[in-house]
Image (cartoon, rainbow, N blue to C red):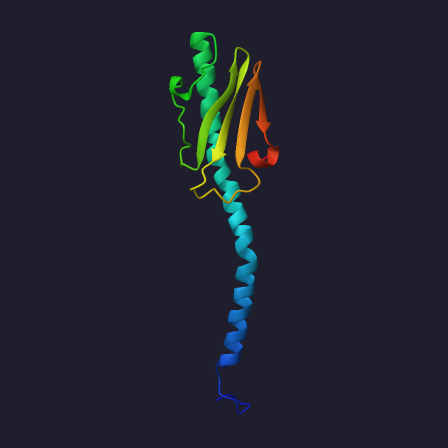
Length: 138
């Protein structure tokens, strides 16, 4: 016992209050944590698109034009390294191309509602990033 005549220690009510406060804090922090994980996993798409860009420039150096298929490109693959995105070429022409990374519906990134698809367009040597700089973590 302490000097006031009360036993020392924590009551069940005090413990319940602390646990309730912890649960509220955890509930508020969880969505922010999930959003940061989603944002961080976008790097998988960015890296895959950069690999395709590099491979396209290598292909063009050797063949004088851009490849029309990922199969023709060394180092490029139809899936991102972590398997979160499907990679595909579009609109390939003599002066440029567009490559897209689309979220796989069955993957951990499926919850990314804001950036379901990231694109990298190259036209006459100039790159453009879509759909927004935010999706590219810029």
